[in-house]
Amino acid sequence: MESYQFKRIASGDANTTVTVCATPCTLHSVTINTTSAQALTLKDSGTNNTNTTIATIKASIAEQTLQYDVDCPTGLTITVPASYTGDVTIAFKPL
Image 1 (cartoon, rainbow, N blue to C red):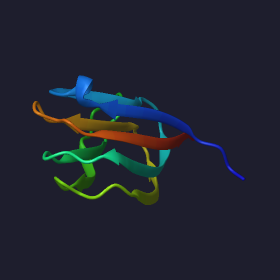
Image 2: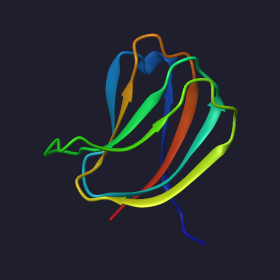
Image 3: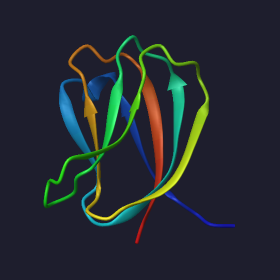
């Protein structure tokens, strides 16, 4: 069984870009712990800031785990809107 690191993103991270991993990594999954009326944007954008969008998790999505298993060659960031009220857990593994 593979093990992953995690990063929790919650309302305290609102209006920021959260660096989940600043180096190449694999995005395993996103668990929606608490839904929010705002969307989150996941980007392949580590230290060289390429900003390639991997996914946008829509607003008001139900609690669930979304599995991706995709490589992020430059790292992984999450754009969190100003009024974000949700709670998600990102599972990832550095390459």
